[in-house]
Image (cartoon, rainbow, N blue to C red):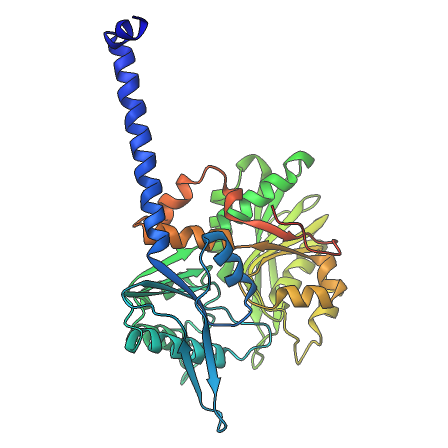
Length: 393
């Protein structure tokens, strides 16, 4: 009787229709996601790749067995050990610590050619957390190559349909690809900083380490809670003529005294740019300096010595980086200096979400907007000062 009365109530009928519509939409979305997950396969260029393994666990998909055979004369051949005909395939391509990028890229091309020519897959998509040769995006002198364009041309010519990359060294690299998703780390970095320091009531000064970092600093500022940003600063550095990893500081613009300085860069290779910017910030009165970097190389410098020794002697109190490059877990296990100074963010949830988002026809902007908590897109797997990795949720 009561239900019959409610049926005649226009407000109840409107609520019921909306409730049914929402349930149907949610069910259709779940079905679409399920079909999308079933319709693709994952391939890793590197064996025993921690990032690829993590993505496979998140996506609930096993990695397709792939073997790079090496013949007696050194020639190599990629063999895919599963029938992938008609499928969408995502190739996860990372470069390991100390690995020759030419070898990594050549292996990726061999797998790409195998998928295109003999496996007859429907679509080939690459997930490349740290794009090969992205720092070579322009010429600094005459008679120099723009190698990142060659990388793009080789991938496209051999049959790659789409690429997912993170934190490109320069956004103009996007134009080299026909279809791409560029995942920026600034939203995730800002979310982590806001959650970590909000209880301490600390305010940040956002610092660009060189002229090329101003755009990234502005992107970080757009994603930060403005209540926690006390100002912005910039370091003007000039590369020393004839050196590949040495710069000199010409000027520091901005006030950092009494605040935490946050230095953002897309990559840290020998560390010269970040270390000198941190030193300049400390000399200007910053009470603490934290670096943010997506791609951590941390290689030794011929002119300045071992990276670990330079890090411990630097003015950088902490470096927050991602696991976009392979081998970081092993380096943390081997070096107490790195365990004391590095906080590592796992980007596997971010890449996995982007993969499903592309598979179902979404955009990166919509993906970010649809996430309830940005913390769902990353995990902190090592906190500076910890002696062991953090437990997984």
